Length: 358
Ligand code: NCD
Image 1 (cartoon, rainbow, N blue to C red):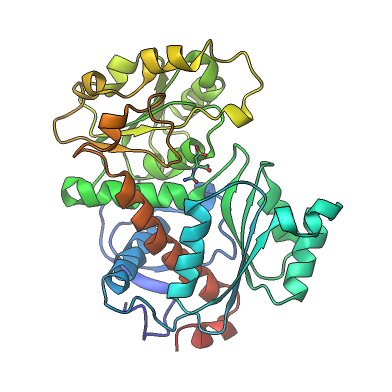
Image 2 (image 1 turned 120 degrees about the vertical axis):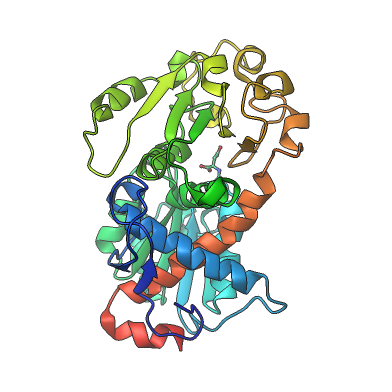
């Protein structure tokens, strides 16, 4: 499929067919999601479709002029109720690279400060022409409420502790770039940090278990609460198409022979207090430093979704070492978001499809 000229935005030839990360015969995959709020409803072949289109978007980003007319005249609105640097800029860059018209609403200067509800705000933005709404909200589930009242497409840029699907997809894309054959099956992927408050970890569980990775979640037991039950419920292949994962507070066991190490921020703004003795103690017991990372495979990569608290969850020298792929994650985020805007823009009504890419 050629992204910028072909009007076939809703399907593509991709490899893989269903079972956790399994390679199979090339198959036609149709994109039928109107919204993207989490990856729990996205199948492995659909994830491969996103990865395939992201490859093509990377090709566009490598050109001297990084702009194609795919979403010409389409209106993308970003509505962020929570702080963001990379996610918001990345979505806006992605939309502009596809020639969409971009409106960004800052809740600090909008009528939200006058008490307007989410539902009223979403209805107002639709009346003002929004077709794709990229939103971030501190309340888990807020994008589902928005999707109920919005006539276009909702793309989740992070909601509370619940989900951050585009982050998980850019993480997966970056891992595939670094692992032989782009294959995660059996590869040890370790996510270390504040799992409890992390929407990034929750979305990564869906994509990485679909990819067939040997996924480990690691942190102090207070920041893993509930994940042990989730892992136990999935043990034995309870969820079709998804492998199992495990949780541990033994950071050395988690890091040993890892292929991928992802550090997560300690999210103080989401903590009620009392979950951690101190950041210094966290850094000493769980921080990803040079000594700990030497337990991983020599070729292991180090990831972080950002923003980083250097010296807490990750040592400054590890963050800038040759293993770190943190800036690649940021750059890949633009291509992944271009792919998703592209797919969603074509998904709403068949009548739109022809318009989208001409
Ligand atoms: C994350 C987020 O906001 O969920 N950052 C991001 O989007 N890259 C992680 C975090 O806040 O720690």
